[in-house]
Image (cartoon, rainbow, N blue to C red; front, side):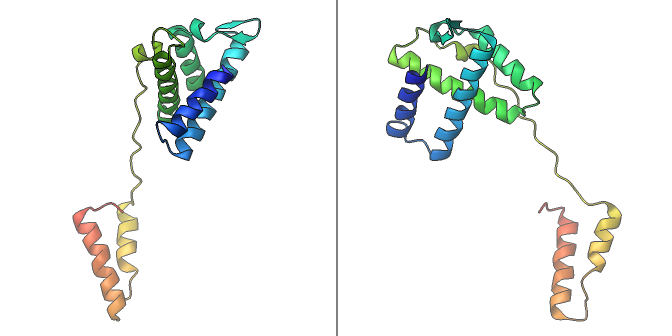
Length: 153
């Protein structure tokens, strides 16, 4: 598998022109997947990973393990994206016959709600600026505009 990952890295650098951060993240994700395969014995023969033996169940087991370790949906989605790119590359290069990742759904990304001020905190904030100076009056006006419009900052 190491040779295939190296070929994939060269593809990301040369043809895909991916950013350094994307390449680093994808390679780390593939190393994590390789570790999972070795630890669980999935797709391994004589401690060697057989890439053609990786199936949908193997990928789902990997994703399940990530979920059990409390990885976020975004993190799991990126790992699945890395695997998807890797298997698509292997399929295009003829190293595998079918891209089994296509059939696996991407976990939904959970959007976190923004934190907000309580009513008391808003009123305390509006009372903070000293209005006896131009700068204080300006600050109070800006704060009131934020409050009146409901703008998020």
